[in-house]
Amino acid sequence: MVSMSQKEYGEVKGPYLQKTVKKRIEALFLDNIGKVLTNEQIQQAAYDPEKGRAPENWHQRLSELRTDDGYTILSWRDRKDLSMGEYMMPSAEKRKKARKRITPSSKTWKAVLERANYRCEWNEGGQICGLKEGDIDPIGGGTVVLTPDHKKPHSIGEDFDPDNPDDWQALCARHQVTKKNYWDNTTGKLNIRAILQAASHKEKQAAYEFLREYFRDKEK
Image 1 (cartoon, rainbow, N blue to C red):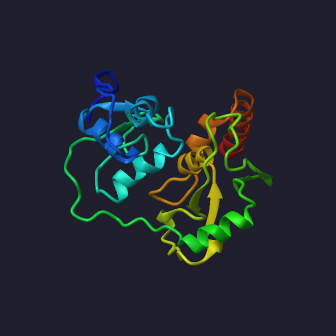
Image 2: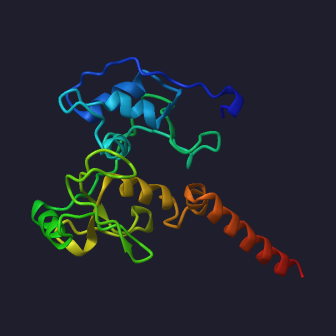
């Protein structure tokens, strides 16, 4: 395994002019086999010359390269020497069988959007995101594009019915990423470390005090 001190970062050799976002991201990784690429570099390569901006759904195209195309693309969940927002393709070899991505039918997706009133359904402690399709995200920036998301992680082993709206929710791009970072795809459990990393200093301090008291009681 490459150590932190030996970590080699890649570069964007574009502009990449492939017709689709996924193909542009694929070209970037193939140009940087064994090198670390950041979120910013991936967005730069995925830049859509027609729309004049990086697409909000670039992370979904990245996921498709893993699941649909069979590439191995490592993240911080796979290697301790990678930080959040860093990825690496160790080789151009594809797996013989790539897991097929399940998506809702067009009828189901329409029903989900109508149920959501064309707004992001992310629910955090009873607080609904509510960003509407076409809004400007005040936190992440960019135009909000709603995409379908299965309500439970694949790793739990759930079967998702493409014809059942109850299995799906509409999420904005920022909360698609949030869910991906907060859930460990290998266990189906919460990524406690990712949640703490995303927390404010005040929230981290509160968590620290809680754990200090918890372990102090355990040691008694």
